[in-house]
Length: 158
Image (cartoon, rainbow, N blue to C red; front, top):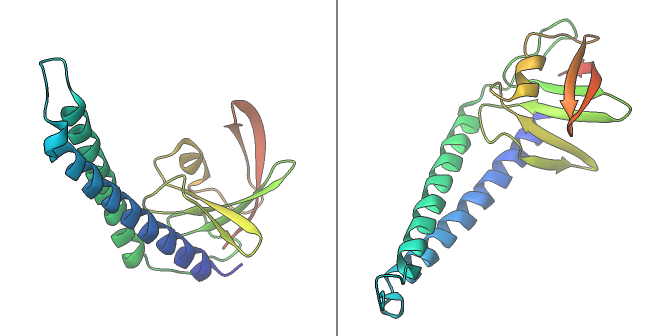
């Protein structure tokens, strides 16, 4: 699989999500400041709750925009079979099933599809990302997947 296509798919997903969050934050802010949502008594918190939600959406959009900038600055390099897993690696692991992970600078948990293959973004700060860092093709690690212990074998690092 071409890693550049994976990164392009992650960037496209992040751009779309930033747009959705920004639109939602603007709509929620408009709701929070609308005269219809003025508190009728001291127990009426609709406007306050909407403002908290708008703030949270703005923060999430800002964090995704930062991740987007990190992916734009990410140097894409090809890894040799003997190279250790590091930032920018596309890692294929096998348990009973095969999974692909992009070790990225941010937006952990983002899932994209390139062709028919799903790829999940892992950050170096995530538990599985930390375990994969520094490992090489052929190495096996123990990890919890969906709350169950599993042995993962690194099939390839690209």
